[in-house]
Image (cartoon, rainbow, N blue to C red; front, side, top):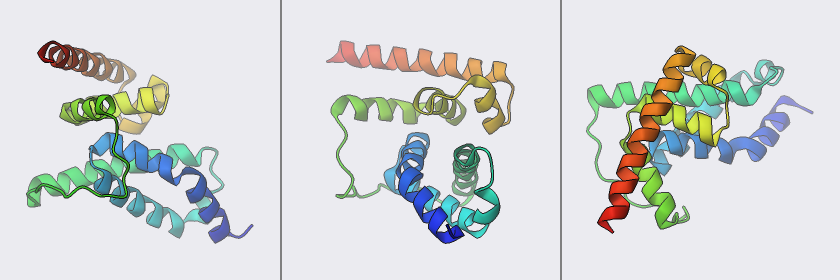
Length: 161
């Protein structure tokens, strides 16, 4: 199989999964799609080498996490975000899911990244630590704090209803 055919097959099989990971990290569907498109366009340039890796998913997952961090650094220095128009092609999430994604978006980025990688990607702490470039104890700390914050905010939301 040629490299471009191999890349197209990979994107067909795993592209939407990367978008979901990016969405959970960013809280914004359009930004998630842009982020993954950038990661995949760079991956295409060196696909011959990348396709020989033991775990291409891990490499691209880390690229998405790093891409989100780079985006945030650029935005925090130069741009002022404005309200985004909803994209009609994106299916509307259920109210519970929307509430959870909204609460997840309020967490500090490292806590959100740990929770997404741990519970959505089902990665062990050692691999999360490797992706985020921190110690395993830091991963556990971020997870504990993030879950505690989510519990409090979701309980408060239930008591308000």
